[in-house]
Length: 315
Image (cartoon, rainbow, N blue to C red):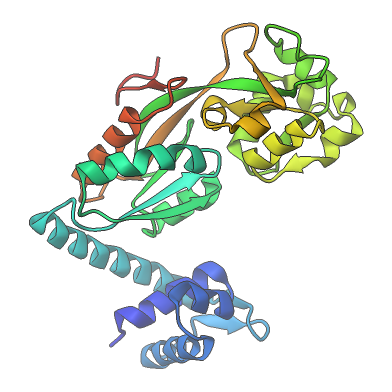
């Protein structure tokens, strides 16, 4: 009979396509994981993986069915554990929360204290990542809930908007735009605009505000090459005079005096572009109370520039 541990090993290898990374994901040595996978293959009498190299693997056609069934078994086991926690105390078990990079650093410092007040027995396990990565981990049951930017849809996933966040423009204090009261979206294309790298949804939202900025002919050399890996990196680059950028307002709420003295934050001339931040969780998740407490904690600790949204309000 296959053990749950062996099933976890098989699923990890299938997702990573690499024995070393799968072992790290399972917090075991690679020989231990390899022996577990081999034991399961021998018990079933079929080969689940083809070893393409020392570590890289491919899933065999027969193995795909085994991996799919293993994922279902592990998911059902997780539901059994969740049901047991719910019967005891739905706010006493850990809550695995994923957040996109442009939300986590600015939401968590305000959120954690309030969450601890409302659910002191509920530890929070935090993961940051890109939307696509968090969505995959949610689908596979590795996360319970994710905090991300709308629009977002996935099969069998519930989505609840929690707040709306305006965008602002950050420019160096001695920049040509610093004397303006507000910025027209098209003006962004006329200057060295710093953007997040590919894969960040906020990058796409900024380009949606300024369609001309997506035209390579509108970019100067700096605009093509200086793509920051985080909002904080871009903010520091603005402070040094490397260019201008667009930021979600929460990222400017805690600007320290040293950096703040080097940056001017300007509103958009028209109605400020915004993004809606939401919670997403599997519809079968058995602890709705935990989701409700998380949503409440977020809405009660937002920076003043953000607008709380009710579950049905998308405005």
